[in-house]
Length: 443
Image (cartoon, rainbow, N blue to C red):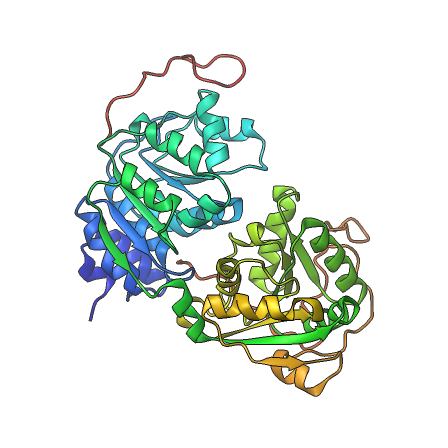
């Protein structure tokens, strides 16, 4: 039997993993970790939820262990497409980094850049960043990548979809040419393939089940709802179910509208999209992870950072346009091989379009015509009538000055969602001089 202890990991890392109840690696971890520990570049392909974070994170921490860090010059760099994903990566790796004496921190947009400039004045082993914030810090002279001995790209295909690859290229070109590089992605086509050709040197390639194969652990249904008004009513009944639910809509404004509608109906929902302040986004994610907020309404891009166990229903309130987006959305449930259910609300004018999209995605999704209150709707989704007792806006101060309110722990009888589990040498650079006003190192 393969265990983390047999992969060649530092005993301190093995002990740290065991303290979190982790002894057996997922397939992508068992395949990629030995090659990464041997110093090879690694190209890993696997669906979301397959364990990629530890597959690249543990080898990075082991390589940096015992290396004296320097201010402004981290020894390791991880790039992720969204703020939430970057923060989650840092949170998952931090306790293991502590076990081997490697500091881990995240720098992301939505946080005052001066805070990150101060952070980087202290020696730091591993920096996890979104491309935009990392480039901003480089441009300000607050981050020097010349000391990065090992770097990783997570969700590279999503970074390509979001238009981040030009920034990613600039950042990687600022790291030493001989540095070790690890790239993980759900798909490896188009722009991602060109990125691999430019930056990875004869990488060891490892693949778990492709994204489309992960649909086998999910049940998929098309819920034919007629017109838009009926769709909104069906969505409200579904949101009132017991259990954790992620609902996808197309636009940021749509997120805000649906959250307001659900909370007015007595459903404890929070929204997630790119225009929300980082603090509000984090409160929504924290509430969803600890079960105090059972319904999360999100846009595609914002939801790419969601890695929460126990999500048993994904609802496409607005069907996606591309089949890859459907699979990425659906991947928020049935993570790491667990079961989950995915439903798509389909108005009459989009029935043919959605049927073609699902066929392209390799998904068999039987169609069911439903109305609010239907027994079949309840059987498929757990839908029930909402209480109608309006809740205050998410994050609004509670009476008595008790701080932001998340609302009750779900609906009556709501089961609490499980929190996310604990897992989830370069060339010389410029010498840094004394600090000057403005918080930047002297060039």
